Image 1: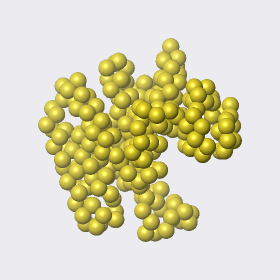
Image 2: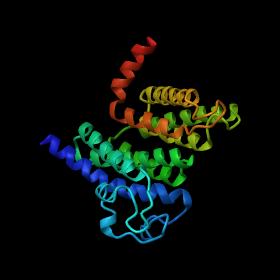
Image 3: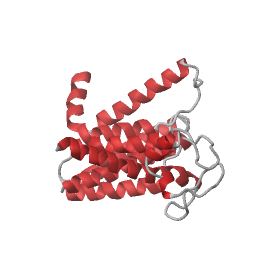
Length: 252
């Protein structure tokens, strides 16, 4: 029964991921998300419903446009599968319907932020506002002390603002500063600590691998948002366990 429900969430996530693809593709270009038909980026042909079945259409067409036969890339099935996996993971961690729905909405926002920053190097304010709205609803639903979480968000944002100014805008972007506030508000204390630890550790590791592998130069910029999103998501699910593990690692 549990496997069936997780599988159901995975397939539901595929369809949500198909919509998130539209958001991730159009939002950085200031295009309408709700209005406008889906079309091929190469030939401009309007796509019909059987061209848009998540994952299956991509596999059936071998990753090519049905009309111009151009290869459309891997990002679309990757985002769809990622969303499906995220939904299944959330389903395994949250059992109550209201908390599950809220967490799926938050996970969707995080997915959008992850891929937009990865592809375009920005963290859109509109998505941050929506994410903040879901976070407020979550705190009210859980009857948590919202002022405490706001304080954690404020302190986290101030810390990132200081880093932004000290590095003269080269270490992180201002979008990371704004996201840090939302991140702190979402997680609170102490979960924000292991979340930042994961973000900086994975960010530094990936940067080192890219430099050593010759993919990036030492002074090249690498989007930090995806690593912050990763730290956020992991700690939303397993924050308490990670805090205990973090204390053991640093010897607190």
